[in-house]
Length: 137
Image (tube, rainbow, N blue to C red):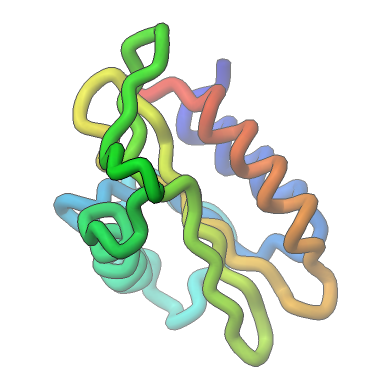
């Protein structure tokens, strides 16, 4: 199971990957970064992405129709009601994938892809796998 650094290295192997980070959305702090940042500042990007992640995870408008906000799997990992968030800009894609954890599940992976070179569907699948395997701590 990969730690933060290994996870980020794997994310950067995806076609079109320009930058990646692991972010705590309650504090807005980047726990790890690699590659480029859309605005040239990884910490500012982490803070801005955390605001978006927090909105998606905490607002009931994005909760499943069954009304279950947070879920807990058989292993004790908690997950927010939203699996991921995709933002499309003129030149790229931003994927935010929530990481299930045994504590507060306030961590997500942020992958920035080049729009011309990236494969959004493949990246979403691979990022989900990385989030499930990521070991924090």
